[in-house]
Structures are given as C-alpha cells and as structure tokens.
Length: 115
Length: 113
Image (cartoon, each protein chain N blue to C red):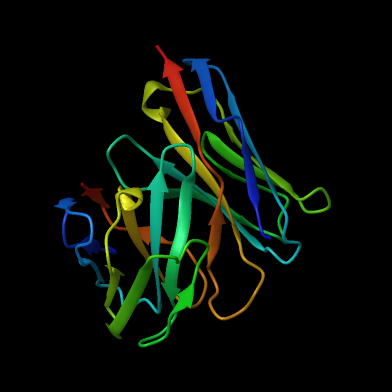
C-alpha cells in the first residue's frame, strides 16, 4: 500500500549547523508534498510545501527539494537555531480521488538543536 | 485565521465506555480528518470526510466511527473504548481546492483505563 518513509527518526545538531531530513514515497500519483513542524505540546503546523511540477522551493532558512523520478523529497534547514527544535513530519498526497489534500504522513523526525 | 477546535484537551474514560470526540472548524472547509498520534508512529489517518454526511475509512478505522451532520463539525466515536485506544487524537481540516494545507486542532489526549 501507500507509504511514506522518513529518516532519520532523531537528529541532533549544533546551533548554526544545517539539518537535512529525507522522505521517500511509494505512490507515483502523489503530487503534493508538505512538511509540518510540531513543537512540544503544540499542534502540527505547515512550514513549507512543494508540488510535483517544482523541483525546489525555498523560504528563508528552509528549503525543500523533490526528485520525482526517485520518489524522494528532502527538507533542508540552514543556520539552525534552538527554536527549530521540534518534530518534523513529511507527507505526500494520496493518489486516489474523492478528496484532494488527503495526506499520508511519515513517522516524524525529532530535531534537537544544541546551543 | 483558521481555527480548529476540539471539545476536550484531556479525557479519561473506562474500558467499554462510548466516547465522543468533537471537532469544529470555522473556515467553511470541505475536508475534515481524524488522526491518531502515537510516539514513533507519526500521524495515522482514522477517517476523513470531504462533504457533509460523507465519510471514508483511513488507514486504521477499526474500533472507530465518525459523524458529519454539519459542514463545520466532525465527530469521532469510539463505540466501546479499549486500552489500546489510549492516544493523542488530532483533528484537521482543509479546503477542497488548492491550497490543500491541513489545519490541525490542539489535540485530545485520551486515556482509557
């Protein structure tokens, strides 16, 4: 069935370093790939997304890349700060119809940024 | 500003009880979703609805049912709560057209004893 694999499950970096989280998806019909950030005790919130007709998207210190052929996409955070510490989830849209925006999520990456 | 609210932040119920979790959104979104969040397992879809009175099973529907009588409200029902349903439950909503961003509620931490 449909699946989204996310790696690593935990990531620890020094403040100022870069962090990269990688995801692969199985459904070739997926065309929307959002990333959510969930701070401790809070709800997940969208931080960046990319559509299948775009290879890369950037927003200040965060960027997402998509390789449709290999079915993988990655989140890059540069110049990490302690407030980047959170759990990050990747997701891919499901290919079947009925409801657009129906997502399958990866299992999450806990990012810790050490001052 | 999209607002998704859930009826309770914390809930403690006994095994065998019928449990109702309610979610309300104020953005006239067509799509609503119920997820279960467990450590190391991410967000797993229980049920979703893309219109009033419409519902579809997600990845882990067993032991759950849903109701959507009004567009803004989506209820998750545990017919007979069991201890393995102890979890964090998150509701989300999104528009039926682009952008498909899902907006999440604050979550309900349910403990079944």
